[in-house]
Length: 223
Image (cartoon, rainbow, N blue to C red; front, side, top):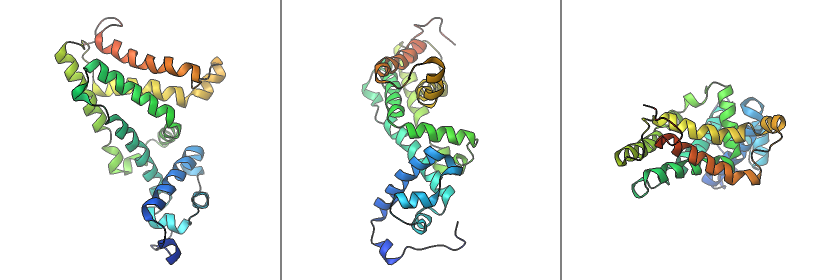
């Protein structure tokens, strides 16, 4: 990281700042997901974005700050997807099923996000904890689930005294596993978890698993 603050040159200033930052974040996300925090190189990110290392430092401050910005972008996109659920106009069972299916769809379509989460777990959330955006980003989804659970209990649909964080973990665990462990699982069991022929079945599975847990359809209700 430069010892002195840097400013863009006249040529660099001609670029649209928002577009430039978006391009840098997009390429940086791919590079960090592919190589990890330690393995990714700012020089390579600059080359792939047709900008300069100087410009990246100007916008983000350094490699760690760029990595944190990538984490913020990736996690915010998940929360944005979850926020599309119209809890007020969906029955509780349909709302929780929809949340599970949207999570499945997002993880399936954004496999770099799964890699970034795995990498940050290796670092024991060292960088995540440095971001005020990230440390407070879990609240919206647990609030959403709490609303669904409250409505489901009030309607008599949900008989399990469920915790919002546990339900979020249940949904995330299934959706995360099929992406994060696709290579090891595929080698051990000769099944590609992400293959097209399994997608619809897996998507339905996670929705029905959560509904069965909450409605007590899978056995005794947990209280």
